[in-house]
Length: 149
Image (cartoon, rainbow, N blue to C red; front, side, top):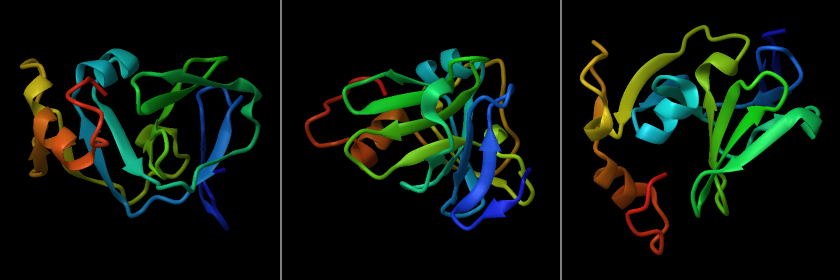
């Protein structure tokens, strides 16, 4: 476990029922502070951009929750581990940093939805920061409006 395959780095859920490989764009990960991610993960969501490189070994235990008109969240139906956030109709997966077997060399470089970050925690890392409005302006489909992610 933890070895990079020809298509990426191996990973999976807590119980092992869902295994995957993914090729992160690089080793820099981002943090999402939006209320949906915090409710979903019981804290901020730390994720690596993996484009469309995510390959699930067996999808029978993979659950998908459509959280908005343009995004879905993947999780293990057996143990509940949050695995990824993906955009529908785009080649974009944000895979949980903690779902990878080998996290060596990962570095936090950005934080989004900082305007929704609660005041009871704060990261000391010096990162790029974006509000929810800035995220929607940069990444949301033109017809998405200002709905939650």
